[in-house]
Amino acid sequence: MILELPKRWGKNSEFEGGKSTVNCSTTPVAERFFTSSTSLTLKHAAWYPSEMLDPHIVLLTSDNVIRIYSLREPQTPTKVIVLSEAEEESLILSKGRAYTASLGETAVAFDFGPLSAVPKNIFGQKGKDEVLAYPLYILYENGETFLTYVSLLHSPGSVGKLLGPLPMHPAAEDNYGYDACAVLCLPCVPNILVIATESGMLYHCVVLEGEEEDDQTSEKSWDSRADLIPSLYVFECVELELALKLASGEDEPFDSDFSCPIRLHRDEEDKDSLQELATEQKCFVEHILCTKPLPCRQPAPTRGFWIVPDIPGPTMVCITSNYECVVRPLLSSEKDTAPPPEECLQLISRATQVFREQYILKQDLAKEEIQRRVKLLRDQKKKQLEDLSYCREERKSLREMAERLADKYEEAKEKQEDIMTRMKKVLHSFHSQLPVLSDSERDMKKELQLIPDQLRHLGNAIKQVTMKKDYQQRKMEKVLSPQKRTITLSAYQRKCIQSILKEE
View (cartoon, rainbow, N blue to C red):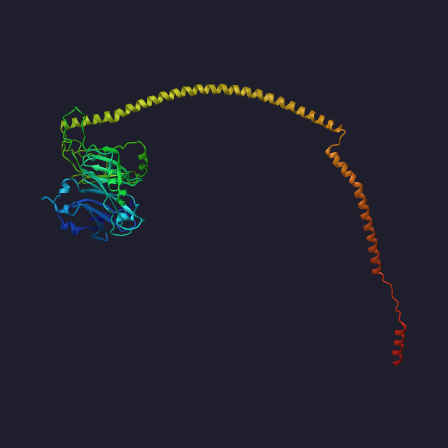
């Protein structure tokens, strides 16, 4: 069942502006399938990580099948991933449990990794191109991890071949436990898998490409898809204390077979700490809520638990077995029933042990480190004071030396100026008494020798200009005062004129 919460608005950003009762829409997923198959149970559910498609939910059921449903068609699966062989499905016990489940060969959890590029042949397609798909890590109860690739964007219905089991290094006799219950993939490069067991063990594994000398890869070297099978390298193991344990020798040992399923959640806000995995810092565990302080106490399982990010700080929301919602980190117990003295003694012993091992011991180590640092700082201070006094003496001597050098410099400067003045006088008198002309004097002589020739040429030019001036003046006078011309006729002209006059 998918529950869709209404929108928030208003001053305090409450549902539907702060109404006391709000209506929520629900979407049943695979309702007919689970109604008709009463023997099946839901093992794990998660959202498909793509943000470009419609919301899809991925369901893992007890029949070793992963089904992907779209909220547009919640009754028909978009993809079906079968994790077991067909003939094994018919081997069902009287209580509805398969033989594979009895041997721990059933999937119990899965998680998606970040989007990556894989070749097309992993989906059974031809070509050397690559497509984007999400790696799906599937955890079995016996501790084995399988891998497949899922892509809903390019070709709906295309699911990669199931690869695995992924080899784990270094090898362990118990294969790192036979009661695996949860897996989580941290989005970093390379991917980091966190595998949890019901006994309270967390294994941090780095997903790397398989080595060539690996037996599994060498046997399947003929298969091109065998190179895609990565390996898991366990670099850290964390043990969760599911119940309080007393120090050895304080009380009789109790049955340590207590186990419980574990749910893993990634911190969406803290992504920078993944970069610190390269350092040698170890993982630390903090108990937030304890519902079974002693093994002899009755179990008080939590119905729901979540950490809500808030502006003042993260807020813990817990629903206890009696359906009481706790939203504050309170240290409380039932007021009606007081614990017996034996349990009080066990709690006090355990608290004393924790303070002695995890607080007082660390404080002693911190005290020794502080004392060592104080001694080192005192020695450094003493050495620095000695250096400071030495520097002061050196500064005093340098000042005196600088004053002496300044006086010598002034005297040397005055002497140098006197010597320069005397040198100038000597050079001037020396040049004046030399029989040979200097370069400037020779240049001046050449210029003086050229002056008469230049004067002669200038005199000729002046005469020519004067003559031209006189000639121009005469021409101008003739133009301004012209003489009357006399007309003279020839004998023939006179004879013609006379004949014309006679005729008239």
